Length: 293
Image 1 (cartoon, rainbow, N blue to C red):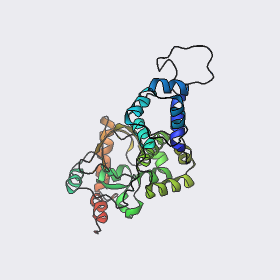
Image 2 (spheres, one colour):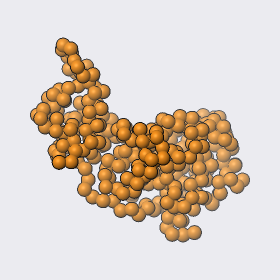
Image 3 (cartoon, rainbow, N blue to C red):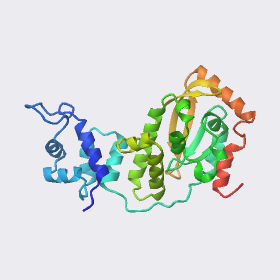
């Protein structure tokens, strides 16, 4: 019987991170484990010890949503971690198609209309599907690459310039790896994700290490600090929105956090218009995805 090693590693790590006090269990005697015992998790979840042991060992059990909710509550999982647990414990049998999602024209026009806010759309495998000129100026002109070579995570992991561009590169790269972990858990048979993981595991030691440590991340909001070669240092706040008619697409909008950062984005906007990242590049991604010029 095949073992689900990812599920086993995740539950073991999260159980070790929860102390009895955190779970509301009085301390009694000397404990040989730092976190909760399996017996304690089973008792709090209302399942037998043998059943929970089999679940944590990654053996074939099919837990109900209510039991997984109970385990998620006991292990104090956040929303992304809870989704990751459900995905691993109740894996999808379906196979997702490999076609590149197409961004709706209205989303594309909205992005182009944002003059002072970098904005772009990511697909389910971290592929850049659309973006505006200011996003290309701040990050990278993905529109200049072939359709199959516009992956944000690959760029972050393999382009040396990103380690200078992102002030907190390791934090950004770790979180992006966690986003892909969550996506991979929802689509375990996605051949393109498997290929990307294999490529990055071979080319980037940090990715190989982080991928082995379950750290699922959602896409909601946050802050990023940049040290741009043209605009200097700036801080942005980002918000992520799932595109209503296609939940595989996520729209990211960046906003300057302070006056200095607004000035820096203004400089980048002028630089982009002057001819560095092409002014028409914002639409090139979508046009080529549709088979256009």
